[in-house]
Image 1 (tube, rainbow, N blue to C red):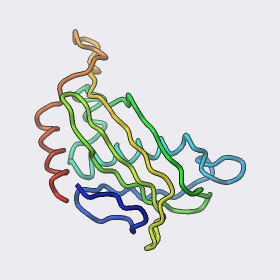
Image 2: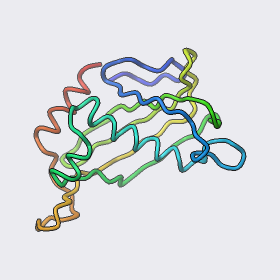
Image 3: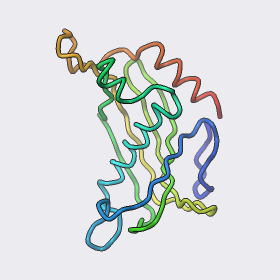
Length: 159
């Protein structure tokens, strides 16, 4: 896994998923800067797209079809520079760790320009949850499915 050093340009590394996001008014407060809770929405959006774009597993198919979810049980963020209405940022996702039934993600939100200045950093831990109402383990943590773990490990090893 690559080590985060601060202000590099958005990574094209294969162990990093990058989601480019145009900042629209709905993400902003009245001052025209991204309202801090919206960064957590950006983190989640990066995670959802990571499943389909990098793991080849449609997020909807996991939630609706396989009835497994990935709720956050811990999340945090640090904010370095404001992000304004009309700008475009790159949200980088890296997998920090996988547990028996959890995935830990690291996020870096950067300028999309080549300078790549860091706007915010974050960390989220998600659990694999049973969403099948007919299951005795409904809404409880599940061991990570083997096929999902294999895809995540393949993604992580591609640094």
